[in-house]
Image (cartoon, rainbow, N blue to C red):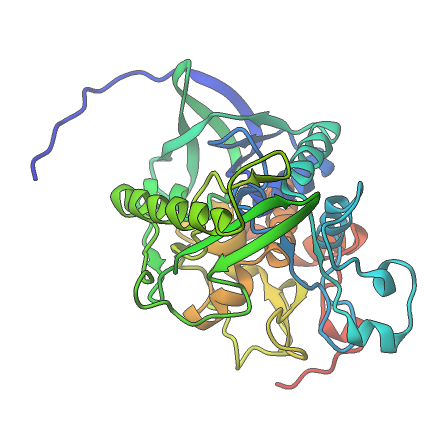
Length: 401
């Protein structure tokens, strides 16, 4: 296939910020919120017109557990704040009464600290929260590139496309929460791609006889088995994603019509507007967090703790080294593109860890524009002051390594 050479051009600067966050999913929401709360002039750029990413536009509306399954809460800070925000005006199912209303240890052991939420309500509440905290949101804004400094180890600006044209956004620190490590990729960083791939999934809301039902079809978070007939999507190529989306639409409609034709008592209420792609690319950070050897392991540069949402018991500390790379000193990441092994990826791509890692990197980005020089003790104290538990020992979970 041939190529065209694009003409050189001057690009107008749209704005200058302390922290530039690319991607408005849960990780991006958390990073922008944390940065703004530290006093940083912060902008969040989002391609769609709805915050929340897969959690809202993708209709993956299960806020997975922030406890260990044995009655101990493990994730705190913005991870818990957003969980509570998601059900501020009600919940879909599985209200965690024991956790929110001071239940017994026995009750907490029976019912993990998780919720189902309405995606539309949650998206608007997140939008309001960011605006209240001074974050500038740019909807309909597509990240298309970036430019490094002369030595190549710092980002100077990112390029965006909007309905009004192409612009540059200048920043001191940058956070890639695209979910695909797109900013890293655009500026020439080497990234890892998933080996497992993504299976076909279609979650939707159906109104039937006056009751609203969340239909979780295809790939479920509790089932990691690959559907060989439709699985193996890499989740990056436009033709592949289009094919995946068309298949989902067909299966979704068939599912809906299996309960009867559309009527005033039976309607397709909410469908995903982005593909359910959960693992694509991630950065090559200073450390690869691993599933088995790092269970209940102490890290001196931990920026928070989180549980295994699949299995009861395992818990982890999140090293700051997983959130950035020395080859790009003023850029970090959060959410499903942090530096982990393939096996660990399944645990770190979910909402609680997106919120946890987002708060950590957003706080760091507001504090310092060179992560190689950041005062980790100060970062940890700032996170602690904002509700984050830094080490497992602080919640009476013993180390195994």
